[in-house]
Image 1: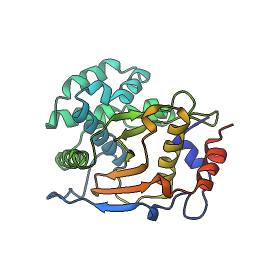
Image 2: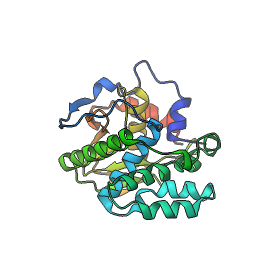
Image 3: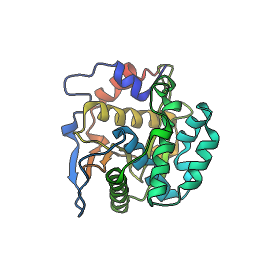
Image 4: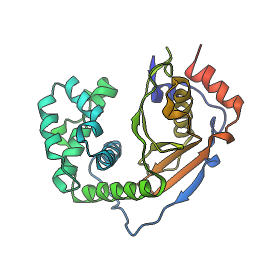
Amino acid sequence: MASVTQRIGQVRQPYGGYIKPSEFQKIQLEDNTSLNPQENIPASLVGLTVDYMSRFMQCGNVMKAFEISCMGAVIARKQSVAEKLLRSIQGLDDVSIISACKLASFDVWYRNPLDAMLSAGYEYINPDRETIENIYDMIMRTQSFINKYGPVVVNGFTFENSGYTEVVSSGDGDFLTRDTLWDMKVLRSKLTSKHTLQLLMYWIMGKHSGQKIFKSINKLGVFNPRMNIVYLLETKNILQSIIREVENKVICYQ
């Protein structure tokens, strides 16, 4: 059994990928900010913090936004620490952003406990001024993006009922708007075939789950707040033969 991302690492895609990144429409958004070149905490943790803080700004429920991190803290036996950090997250001030970074560091305990044992503890996560500024700016870019492409109708989604299989038994996506399944990728580099396969798997698993929220989805999208770029693909442009192969050979529906 594997998660979506673990399964992607196990399969060999056709040359260029099941969906080539070049098939996505690329839209450069403009703002008046430029990010600092250096950050002093891992890029993956910056990405989680931007994602979860953006969810918090949308829904106003900090516990819901950091749900995975809180579950990780329980596994790490640091529930009291997580509760204290949750109370410190009030908005986009420095204390809130620093607390959010520390809280997001517990994510790995839920997603990959073996890696968690090798990672730095929350007490060593201390973003500096440049990192805090970058996180703030990327959250603001995300809010502008949502104002343009939203509203968000579902923040965080899974594939219960019949979306999972014995091969792909876990995985959760970022958010849905009325007609688009979105993934947030805080990347310094270009979109890759691993990213596009992740979106395709989410869409297929959503359809198989039977949940009504996926019935109106006709586009797949990625937003990268670091580069302030939107990538979009209409699902009607995905070959049926590709969909069937991913269903049968990657996700492995019976």
